[in-house]
Amino acid sequence: MDKRSDEKSTRGALGPYLASLRNAKKLTLREVEEATGKVVSNAYLSQLEHGRISRPSPNILHSLAEAYGVAYESLMEKAGYITTNGQRQPGQKHGRVATFATVNLTGEEEEELLRYLTYYRSRKGKRDAT
Image 1 (cartoon, rainbow, N blue to C red):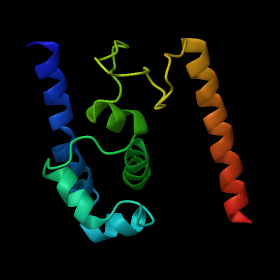
Image 2 (tube, rainbow, N blue to C red; image 1 turned 90 degrees about the vertical axis):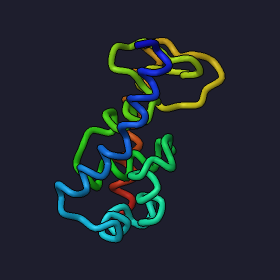
Image 3 (cartoon, rainbow, N blue to C red; image 1 turned 30 degrees about the vertical axis):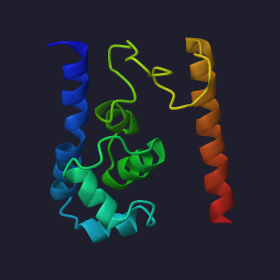
């Protein structure tokens, strides 16, 4: 199997995977919409599950990962943003960090961004709670 067909099969797996996660949690489309704070509408999720949308934004994937209690990275991989073997696909900017920088980051820079993102999210959560 060549890289392009492998990438397509990985991406094509996102919809059924999302549907299986939702069904395993016994959630309706509308319940997922509520669980994501309406970041993901029930109509959009339906389109994702049926393969009409194959590459949602990382923000959408993050909301779904939190709602389903799964690793964000696994959804990013199924959407074709990252790979597990560390090899970049054509057009893919970075390995694990979902950024849109114009230059590739070093591994050290990616790690630093991940640390900062963790810090930022922890601070944001504290501000939201007050």
